[in-house]
Image 1: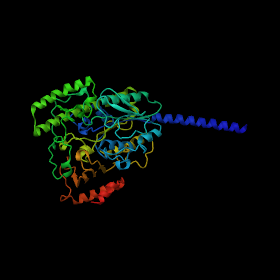
Image 2: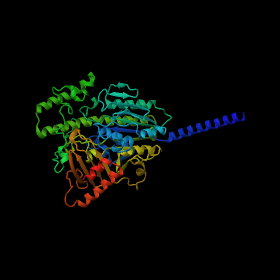
Image 3: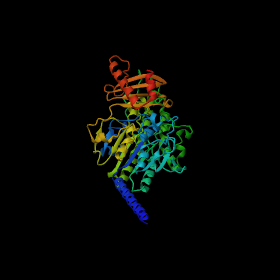
Length: 516
C-alpha cells in the first residue's frame, strides 16, 4: 500500500512538473518573435526606391527598410533560383547542401534546415508559393507550393496530401491570399515562421491585368554600359543573355504574330476569357505599332529594352503591393510588434547593364541582392548597414532571434550581433561559386569580393581569370588581371581566395585552384 501511495505521489509530481514546463514553454513562446520571410524571384535592387532607384516606387519594401534596416551590401552565394533557396533554408553553400544548379539538382529534404530547427523548438512553420527545389518540403507543418517555376495566371499548387489545386487569379495575389488563409488558421498558442515565396519578377515578366501599361509613358534611360563590347572579358563576350540577341519577341515581349500561344510559357493558354481579353487588348495594339515601325539595329534593340523594362516593372508593382498586404495583415491582427519581417530576392538581376537581362554572374548586379529586415524593439528604425551579409545568413539569424542554438555546420553568420553592436565589423570577404553550365552560356566560376577588389576564376567553357578594382571601376568593365602594377594585389587576393575555399571546404574549387 505504501509503495502504491509513493508511486501515485511520484506520478502527481511528474504531472505537475510537466504542466509547469508546458506553461513555461508557452510563456517563452509568447515572447519569442514570429518570423515572416518574403522571397521574390529575380528582383533587382536597382528597381527598388529604398535603394535610390528612380525607375519606380516601391513604398512597401521601402516601409520595411524605413522601419528596420536596409542592407546595402547583401549578396548571394550562387546567383540562380533553386540553389539560392537551398542556401537560405540550410545556411550552407551549394557544395554542402547539394543543390548546385537548376539543371540536375534535387534538394535532399532529409538534411537539416532552419525550418526543422524552429519546428523542434516549438515554432509552427509554413512555406507557401514558389519552392523550386524538385522535392517535397520538409520541416514545415504546412506547405503549398508552385510546381517548378509556377504560372502567372490561375496557378496550380502542389499540396501536402499529394493533390494539385488550381486557384483562379494572378499568382502574386493568390500567394498572398493563401498566406493570409494559413495565418488565419494557425495555432495562436505557438510562435510561427512563414515563408512566402513569390514567383514575381521571374521571366516572362507578365503583369497583373490591373498593372498593364503602368509605365508606358516612361522612356527609361539606357544604362551607361548598355553597349558593352566586353573587351578583355572572354566569358562576358560569349554569353547568351543579351537583350539585343537573346530576348525573344514572342516569349519575352509578347509580340507573337502567328506564333502558337503555347510559346508564351503556357501562361496565356491558362487565362480565362476575361483575363485573355484584357491582355490581348493591351498587347495587340503595341504589336501593330511595332510592326508598322519596321525597326532594325540599335533602334530595335532599344525598343526591346523599353518593352522589357515596362513589363518587368509592372510585374514588380504587384509584388510590392502584395508585400504591403502582408504588412497590413500583421498590423490589423496585432502581430507587427512581435514579428520579424525579412524581404529579399533569390538573387539580383540585370536591367540592361552590360546589355543583359538574367543573373548568374559574380558581377555586382546579379551577385548583389536586395535585403531589408524589420525587427521591432531590436533593430532601430531607419538603420542602414554597409556590412557584408549574404543569403547564407538568413538561417542563423532566425535561429538566433528565436533563441535557438545555431548548429555548428551552418556556414552563415547571424546578422543580429552586428546590428546591435556597431563595433562588430562582420565578414570582410565574400565567397561565391556558380556551377551551371548550360542556359545563357555563362561559364561556371568562383571568386571573392573584398571591400575594394574582386578576383574571379572561370573554369568551364571559358578558362580565365578576371580582377576588378571596384573603387575605380564599379561597373566592372576593365579586367586588370595580368596588368602591370597589380602583381602584389593579385597575389594577395589569390591567397585570400585559397583561404576562403579551404574555410568553406569547397573541394571542387580547391582542385581547380591547384590546377592554376
